[in-house]
Amino acid sequence: MQNGKTPKRHPITWVPTLYFAEGLPYFLVATMAGLMYKSMGVENEQIALWTGLLGFVWVFKPLWSPFLEVARSKKSIVLLFQFIGGAALGLLALALQLPVYFAASIALLALVAIASATHDIAADGLYISSLSDKQQAAYAGWQGSFYNAARFFSLGGLVVLAGYFEKKMEVAHAWSIIFGMLGVIMIVLATYHSWALPNAKNSVRADADPITMRGVFATLQDVIVDFFKKPGIWLAILFIILFRAAEGQVTTIGPLFLRAAREEGGLGLSTGEVGVLYGTLATLAFIGGSILGGYFTAWLGLKRAMFFLILAMNLPNAAFYFLSVAMPSDFSVIAVALSVEMFGYGFGFVGLILFIMQEVSVGKYRMAHYAIGTGVMQLGYVLFKMMSGAIQAALGYQHFFLWVLLCTIPVLVLSRIVPIGRHEKPVVVASSVRAAES
Image (cartoon, rainbow, N blue to C red; front, side):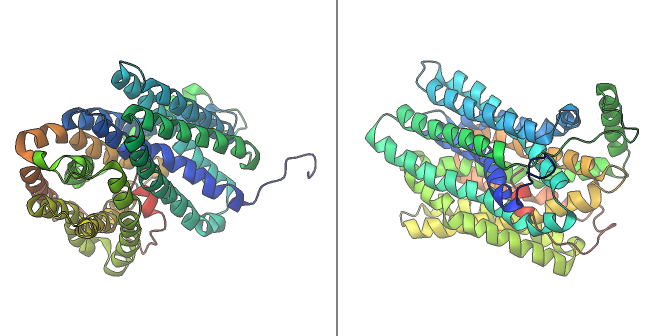
């Protein structure tokens, strides 16, 4: 104790675990839920529609972020929503045993998504307000690494474990165990963070009066009006949305194609095999692609690099088209194709993050406008994710992957029209690996 105050914990005691807790529920909603529903016999169209709808939570989170400033502290918000997320996961484990499991599980996944998105806002705010600029840079690597450690743990370890349990018991029981484990992990992390997290108080007005709801509404209105007054903003929004058109479709249907039986046009892999593929080599390829994409863009400049970054985003589509035509049974061939998929995604996505940073968020409300830009980015993802199931059902897997290859053409054309590089400065893309999942 110092001067009667709680001692400030070293960042290494809380930064890694905070961002591990941020990643877990996101990967659960974005990918694990789809694999679970596939194992339970839900149609691709329904999986794509409902998991896509859940993604809208991350689209709209900038709209309620200013209201979190009214809370006593960022730590209290982080703890509250970690506990809510853990409790919702526990209820989700129970809901899978109900006759109306699908409706009940979607409702609880929505609660998990809301808790996760709100937690993201508070966690990032806690990180920024508790660390100096030098510390923020120093721990950016830890931040991104442990966010992606959640990907390894969930899509690798837990999906592999779910595949093992599926062979021993009913599918619903297998996934109940997995979500029960996730709920316990979130509660344990919240309990640990009640000790480890710094007590970062929320800001107050310059005149020392507490922030009021009326003031928050006024600021939010000004932020939104100023955003849509930017020159060329509607063209930029169209570019951001179309940038994610192919990705939103292929990342939804791709894993389902891997799980679908061969007589249905899929590769017939087990849940465990998909977990091994995505949670190990493919994740490493994604991280490597993100790092190399950042250096490539810093070297060439965003304006000149953008065309190549968009082409890299087409590698996942080409990889799945190859798999749907060749239908390989050799596990190593599939692993290489999925590594190409994830490398291209990681490499190319840097372009969109930097476009939002350097072109969309410039101005009076840089942080708020960046949040809106990433909300638009998520909107593009979920819109095309939702329609991907219906398109795949109409075209079949092979023609569907050909279709997503063609979806890259409009954004390539737009990249020659939309202003890029007007405010460009040399940057180091330290957190693009994590931002790419938002």
